Image 1 (cartoon, rainbow, N blue to C red):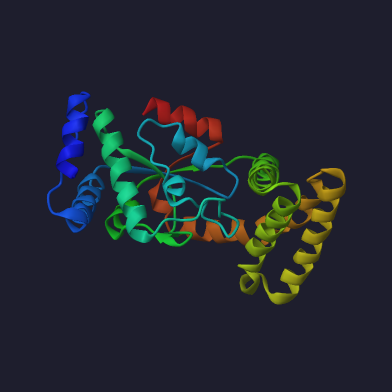
Image 2 (image 1 turned 60 degrees about the vertical axis):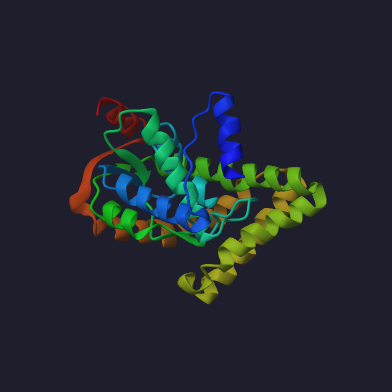
Length: 262
């Protein structure tokens, strides 16, 4: 069947290579392709939560959106409405994306977001992780208020819209509320149970306000301390360990301009 499909594609002018040996051979080809392409230079985009790193990566012709491939945005609130793929499927998609981008241009280096070992349930291939650990980092340092607005748009406005669009107003609101509660619950031990309970109460009040008035302002009362007490200190600690790799710091626009000049 593969040969038949290949012939059909060739008849329409599409040259598609055929991998002999079935799925196991395909997996080995994908693993080998990822290893080979990961040997090219890598530049990481770093920054605290809400810095717009993913958007910056997506704008680069040599950017690879790892979070998009993983269908997860990395944080405890990072799930999307699309379920994550199996580990093998994620690795296969990553290999295909690397091959496609590499085929479109003369590639000097990859631009990736500074990620941990895992993105949700998927973990990065070790060959890529090893290369990323040695890679130079450009750090986005935007004002706190701007980061809050990005997070408001991403987690409250857009996710509410996506849930209600997918499930309807009532079921969508319930799913959206559960999504926010689950994100907070996932880090309860790191917050401490008392602080977790306090922020949960604040989240409940914010949801009640959003439901009655449509305003997302109430969410700032739990999001601000969550950033100040958990996410920002955690990322800064991780970044300190890689301080020698930092090659540029600036606002989102500064980093975007710097990338163009490279």
